[in-house]
Length: 283
Image (cartoon, rainbow, N blue to C red; front, side, top):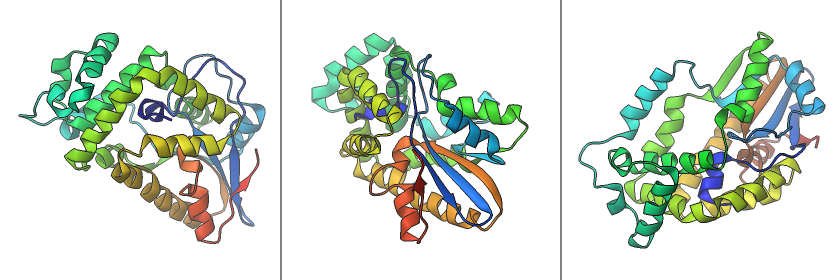
């Protein structure tokens, strides 16, 4: 999987979806684990009766983070963390071999170079990746989190987050500049195959093939191992600890996090197993 496909986690043409589901339970608690795709095109029928039943039976929906309805607040947070004065132009922060591909991406997405020049390198990389996904027809309003949030709130049940938006953005913002530039390089380099990569990845997600997702995520972050540690390994360990503690409280919880967090040797399930807790795969 490529960096741009990673940002999406993920997308493709309309298909009937049945992604993987796991459950962690004890005598009086049941926690469903479901891997999500944050942005999707229209027409993907992933909310099957089995998934919907588990969502509807849960007392609480737990996401990676809950985005405030006040978009101005998010804009202020992004501006505070993601912009710095006197940065070199973005073209000076990318590898020389990728300057021409960067110019091509900017033309294709109609992003203005001046708009990116004031961004910290990590935010510029994320912005470029999002623009490529939008060009492919992906939209966060079609993403799993948006659909689940609307459904659960309509039932007047709580939606909570494992992290705050500031914490999530902080993972990128605290990366050393060398890692931020590696992320930028990988993002631009991978745009040429973004469509094929996302189509392949969505097929893996809908068929529950977690090995392909794990392999793709690992490959995407090979150029930025520090980001892999911060974004994946460390967070999975914290979330597993949260799940283990949540088992002490009776009830049913539906936990929906990015699909890559539930795949591979550093997955949430693996971290739970290290604590002696089994996550049973239902599909």
